Length: 368
Image 1: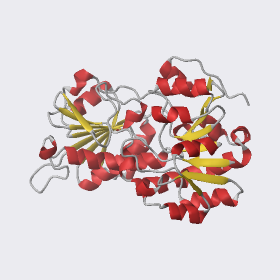
Image 2: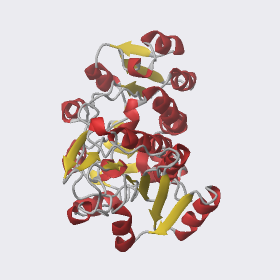
Image 3: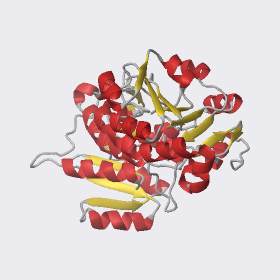
Image 4: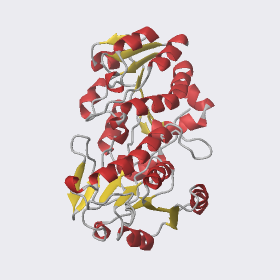
């Protein structure tokens, strides 16, 4: 199979879909790897390193898409990339289709086979290709929240860790999954007072034990969320419905409960965000303010730390890429139910229930 790696064009997206070790693995298995010139530079990977691993470097994205049978990316295609995709081509990337009906419509019309990293799901419900980026985003969430909490950035002027004689700042985390756990690790490490609200009582009990009482856990309810918002300095939105739109846990009215100058970091923005007032932002313009509350809603947070994020992602995606390239998508999906769950669009059909429900569309299982 010919595997193509284009450069990413999303604002300040410096990650890349493969590293030299992945090139070596694919070429050793008899596949061709074509990469857009300069695609890896943002992650500190030179064209020479790719060539040494066995890749062929092509001058632009059009050449890569033109040759590739499977395109491996990091982020979903943007409108300038739409015409480069062709019927029957495999697209292996983060798709996050639920809040982007226009991309869903295009992929269906073009009959692209879209495999979404974020919906490859193991039998135990874990998400092996989403997890590494959730770990990065969770750790970054508190870091950026602390930054925008500074007075110079328009925030309340609170130091999350406090100092002797002054109370620490308060971090409220909505969700109890991977993003939430890693956000809690950083927030607790900084010395903040941290409260996590989640629906999974067993998971909250596990985290209470793991954090040794340094993390306050609460059942997620509107009442508890409203109570916690009223004294929060940083709120991290870390809820997830696999493949579907994030629930709106913070209404515009509830936002008014937060202290002026506090910060909402909506990590769920890839799936539409968990606050009614959230909308996607970019690394170039990361924040906006509603009712004196700073919103950070960058949809590709890990792109800010591409060296770490690229290697974390490719550690996870390469076993699946090798399986798809070696067996073809149909046989690979027959053998691997987790991969089958990753197929969101196939031959003009929407094949993911959660995306369909989010967009009011019909869906069906892949026909194999």
